[in-house]
Image 1 (cartoon, rainbow, N blue to C red):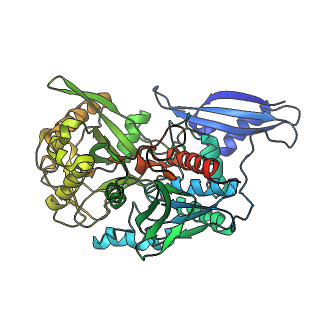
Image 2: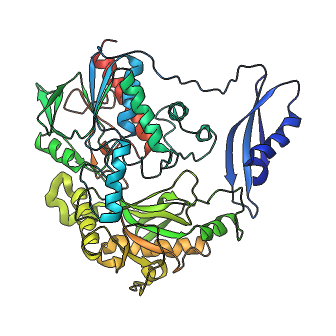
Image 3: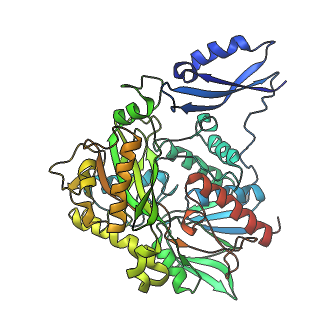
Length: 520
């Protein structure tokens, strides 16, 4: 007998293991077992509740147990798949290669998760940006030290449960299988990434760090291999290109090799930080959230109208109990992002607030061709750096001052370690973005009473929301539309928007490559 029960409970019951057991156990008859399957906080009403799904089963065969098992086959002598990048797309492509009997060989321009920490510390404390090792580049990709949120709407792309189970098998908490918006945390994700590395290398795969790809070997319209900055050449049955949204040199390489790429819309704006207690009071309708409820998240969106042209303004990568981090990939630019530790126990809440970039914003950059959106993005990041003094300090305004266009005489405490400089963000952002952000914040203040306050700070710029370049691929084979055996993959190619969707895309690219070119 397998059965699912659904309850709406008080937070102190649903979110406390002992109290939940005391509530459920009397309802379980005949020696059956119960298991928490799903939980979701509902804060829409005046009183917060938690919806839970409980699975009942008899005997020892748990029908909801983990189905995924780490691959055991050694692939040392199997055909080689070359994978550029060790973000979620690259790592999960490698795991799928192991399962299907191919040998993954990965190349990462940055360092492993342990050594990468030193370069992150240098950005925060010394304002030194290593172009190959930073918050975007290195083992695990941009998500490793930028939160580890696992929520995705990409249910149709692949098996979301499978990806979550693979993360659990490599050390993530089983809570990610239960929560509606699962989250590993930037303090725990590096260990998960290192465990995935161990699986790949112990089964005969290879991972090469500090190995920047500078060329692609092409013969007769087919991708044969890659060349590293050291001059070393590696040959394989195909190449999965999983370099992430910030590998500008790879985009330039493809253009140089006459491999078709396209300019792609993205979103750009700022990151706003509030006291977490204020967001808790708005979302949970109380002065203090208590010991059971987690730090409250929010999601806000609105439509702005200027000259009868509508354009959306929306929150992006909201990080409750988190920190703002520097995400530049080169000296001379300032980029910010957000992250949260697993406990989400910072006193701050931050979120990107962004506007979709449209063709009208790119008119003056048309001479850059396929790089028009990238040139627009880059110019704003450099301007942010100049306005803030030329290092990694970020330009900022109090939220109320931002809305009225006033220079802030001082700034509140902020989690951004390199520091802030009071500046007019209208000097950084073009009017088409800045004016809509002003309108968006005003509307958010109407929807969430207390949201607009000078206790909040607006920090610029949030510009790496997605790739400004799209690398087209065939719908059936998933390889590049012109170049065989090259599989554009993940967020950097325009096919994903976060850890989960990138992981799913990586798996599918590996499957397509192996099915077409490797007899396993």
